[in-house]
Amino acid sequence: MLNKYNSQFYSKPIEVENIDWEILVNIITDSWEKIIYSWYDIIEKRSYSTYISKCLLWGFINSIPEKVLIIWFWWWAFAKYLEDYISWINITWIEIDEAMLKIAKEEMLVKTSNFFIMDAFEAINILKNKKKNKYDLILLDVYWANWKIPDYFTKKDFFIVIKELLWLNGILSINYADYRDENKKIYDKIHNNLLNIFWDNYIHILSWKEEDWNISWIYNLNKKYSSEEVVLKYLEKVQNSEINYDSNLIKNINIR
Image (cartoon, rainbow, N blue to C red):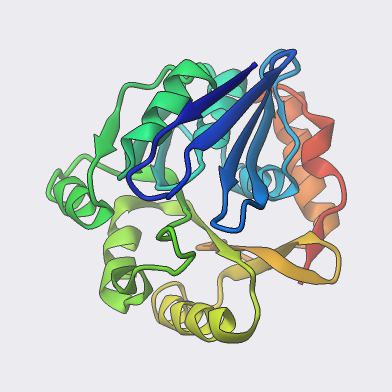
């Protein structure tokens, strides 16, 4: 089954395919190239995106998160996964495009009702003024329809606020898509700002070995971890019944 959702930010409708409960969310470019931005199996409860798996794994490195803040874009697969694997999860999702909310609710069957359908700048300012808003995990993936990061989300002041929204051992996970050429200059600027805030407590994970198309940068870690340590940390939490086991999370961990 194929459904289409009109977006105010993309010139062509977002296509959502449901193939035996495997949900594929596609954005069609102006050249009619179809790009898959999310692929989640609702029955098997797993994501087929290597990037999503690695971001989730690092979100569990300190502790299993209870409160998660998701900022923009195609994080419905994150929200669905967290709901499937953590019964007590509390998710806040900031999204500017109402079509994304419809996809999350109607296609991914995401249950959370804590949404901000507005510009992230406004939503962040609302959250920072509420003293009890602290998160164990913040997932950030902010791009305009032209695949450029809005200038506000490259500035040090923004990340100072993000750190204020994290618990002391909370994790910040950022997606840097197409880490090359002009994009790399922007990402390096962001990274340098984050170094001034989180110091040296970060790590890079490649979605594919020796390929810079997508890199997950994880900040506010308490140490540098090897891939073996990450797997052991995860298995320890599974053994302690903190989370259900997912073998896909610990496959091919490529740490830079």
